[in-house]
Image (cartoon, rainbow, N blue to C red; front, top):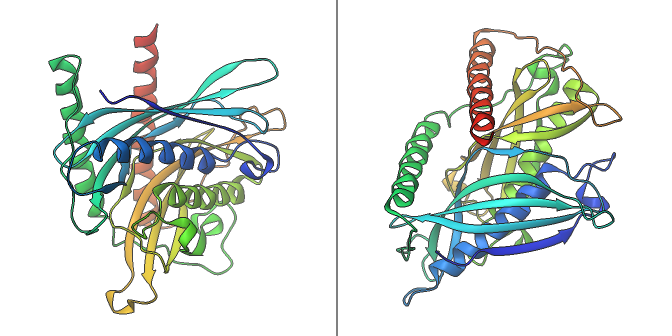
Length: 331
């Protein structure tokens, strides 16, 4: 296997919310940076076209513990599977209290990258294979690859949906908390190719999801997990992106927010607006002691909202069952 890559950074006030919890988007951006570096290094370890690893998908990511201002984030990335044209990178994040020396595992994430040629952005480079410690490890990686490939295909079918604005909505409804953010993509947001870093996009998505959650609860909120983030199309420098979020499901102590990213090319307007990224974020509400608070129930209006709520409930129960299974395995 390729050598793991590690980066560390102290968390500063502009990385956190008003009560000192580090934004989930800040951590997601660091995760993506580590993944991009190790993926790009690996894909350039062979002769031929030089390339950059472009983010294609992020699997479900759980935020196990909050991180605070003054703590050091240690991000370690390792390549765990390669197909002909893609790289799987697994990333762990540790928080370190540099006063007490205490360390906690705060995040585990799996990202998929595709290497794009520096000479021709539409050309996908063949990935150098890695060595596996056993045939079983390679087979497990192949199964993960096939599963994410299937789910990406299914997700594309929902890409026609849009979030409609409603005037004077009732509190605790979907319309009351839904939010959008508009951002002009500049050079500092982009890779060497002139396309947006996946980490920049994820940070903006987390900000919008956080606004939706805060509007619904009117309390301190933090990211609890992120379901698979699918990067359907690249976003070019100079595009205007609209990041939209809406509440889809609430349990007693959590909220699921669906987030879309739509890109609008200003220079090449004839290409039209398109759906670039989609994901589901889960947030929890906290009191002043960082303990979970009950979440106000979501008021549903219409069949579509009821349908999305039931789909969200199914995801919630599936993830809950998976967490219990993982916990039993660790005991």
